[in-house]
Image (tube, rainbow, N blue to C red):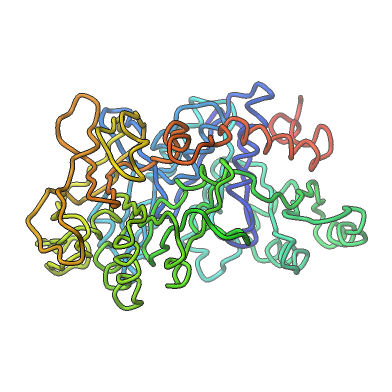
Length: 493
């Protein structure tokens, strides 16, 4: 592998690995490095569609997608060769080089590593042959000693790439020095020898107050604290695999965070436009929503059962009866339909057919082949709160097993009205979006990442991603001493 590699390891999940890796990608890109991101295995239901080298399309974790954009390169499947997408019942769909691998998905967890590491290693070598510098993100912690034998995401990747490793701790909740010391002590000795520095993330206040902690830590471990990253609120990057934090102010848009909600990262663009977004699981927040969204779902039938068990199904129906704007995206649209059919048991292992919320006269049937499409679409004639989208073009992506068609349902909870096909792909007559009264359903993910859509509905536009990436890189300029990051990428520079 010709590329030099820098690897971001974390003491814990949520320490800020994805954030720092994205910032490093932009920082090195601005310095003129030919840089690309890599993560051997990601576990997330936030995914993006990418073009595959041999033709067709695949999917990778959203974090590596955004890291590639920050690095100024085209996102590709080799940047995240293994993606685990959690499903109900402790299962996970296994995506290898962009495509679902059912055989690996059915394999016991501890047996997968020996099959997945060669795949990840090949992708790492290929990426390293094409670029001069790789920014590699680890997963979880490299000190999970119960998983050490299977840890190819941290240990084997770090050793194979001969990466200059950084270890990141989130100092905000406390205990960061203990986390760094303990992780250093328990990690594989080979990776320990490759550690070049500790990074304290999300620090509030004057870094001088950290003394004598960094000095004591280097005396114990021999590893210096080379970076102190400030606590950056509203930095503009979506959360990698968690429900985003809510603002304290009353929300303008409420997204129902079902247990298997997916692609919640696509709503970060609304935050960048200054729109207050809340991710809700309670009826009170949903009942007070002005704009209500049902997002994508990795297990639509399980989320449907959850909506009914919590009473949120009635809250959604009440919102529609009040004539307030209600949006369903992909799985969320399927939930709004009259019936969901899974004759092959693709989602839960057993055939199923369940009535939906009956707010759109659509029937959805799951198929074995996953549809992965990068989509450009145009809205037709809409009415009511959605009328401003009439004629607007939008780019996005589709990741789905479901196929939806208009059906004949009993809509006793609504006034009479016909369903309208309101969204079609460019050059395609088949609809991928429908409206009935105040309810809009679309198969297009990434709708709000189009400035024209946000401007039409809310009168504002999101901050461009390029500005977000540059701000992250600017943050690193103040967090690391001059020359430190250059030396990691090129010791002779």
